[in-house]
Length: 208
Image (cartoon, rainbow, N blue to C red; front, side):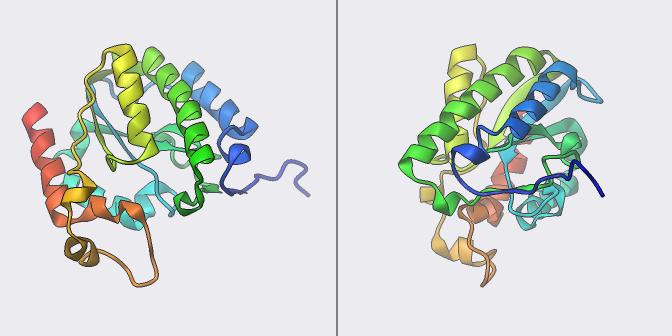
């Protein structure tokens, strides 16, 4: 019998963002993590329901677009999530494959706490790791809590972190319907519309 089973952290609220397991994993990243290749562009992007991230529906389309444009090897994807600030190469590590946070269940109070905790983690990550990256950008919904934290910390650290997603208010419901699944509701489907993915690719090409 395993005396220390790995917990699957499914839920929304303080216990699932300010969690000792997530906090300890974050401290380990700050203390030990160094990108396998330095000098890449850091691309902060969205979490996903599917784990590990690369096997999720939304990440499949993001990765496919970057690969087809021969851009993926120039980037270090970093996921912004209730679990922390997660470099893609750590996505197979516990606890980053064993949690589920449903944004549809967030209340204003939970959103405020999420931003506060993410501000702290993102600030620590960039303070310790920004030297490893040549530039920074993000691909997030403009109205998301994750992007609000990017704005907050970019301003605090005087870092330019442009958002390469088109504002969701400018993406039509018809565009979203073309990439949606009947059984799958997700605010971040807006990020895999053709126009948004084309914009991501074009904007990255501009900064290389």
